[in-house]
Image 1 (cartoon, rainbow, N blue to C red):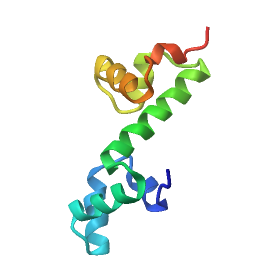
Image 2 (tube, rainbow, N blue to C red):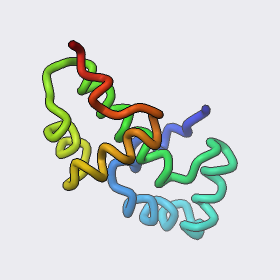
Image 3 (cartoon, rainbow, N blue to C red):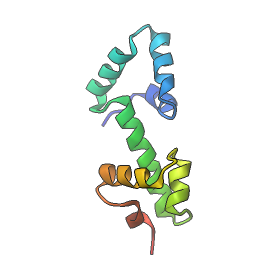
Amino acid sequence: MFIPPYAYQFVKQLYQFFSYADMVGLNAVYLDSLFKKETGATLHQYQIKVRIKNAENMLRSGKYKVNKVAEHCGYSDVLHFSRQFKSVMGFPPSKCIPR
């Protein structure tokens, strides 16, 4: 999946997307539809994938527990994080922790 370079700097804070739309003179909804056309995902969906991939990398390192990874990746609810992780990855976050 091709990810436009501008997306990386705005993906951590979704509200900045609207600021970017203003900067380039486009409606945010229209810009989001262009993003989806290019990437196959809305910016919000892409943001979730980036957060979950980051979580996967942290868990695979073996240095962090699930609750700390969830918190680091912006989730205040570990159960919500676990469900979203499984939805994106197809397996629970506990499967990433080295034994």
